Image 1 (cartoon, rainbow, N blue to C red):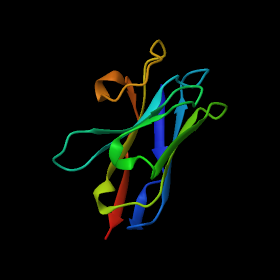
Image 2 (image 1 turned 120 degrees about the vertical axis):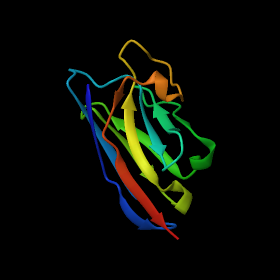
Image 3 (image 1 turned 45 degrees about the vertical axis):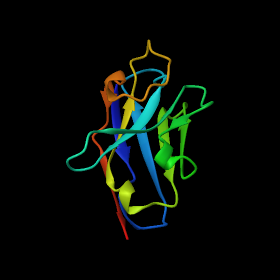
Length: 125
């Protein structure tokens, strides 16, 4: 599975961005997909994850109510709508997918087998 992320950029605090990630290399969309982020000097942090059905996504507490993860299985894509952005949201954002035999949503990077290249999100104050 290859993942291609896009949509990052520079935005002022309070603004919005929408990240996209498209999967290729499989006939069907990966079952569990997620977003992580990493700031310089920090460990990669879980942001959100979603199952194939799209029901009951999970989020890290710091983005709950501001970010929304969604997916389009026909397009083999996952999206992250980010609203009310804060300077502390600045990071490189990575999309990820679990290996197809795993169906449980997990928050640890080790649970994801496939990773996109990352897209930079910078929020200015």
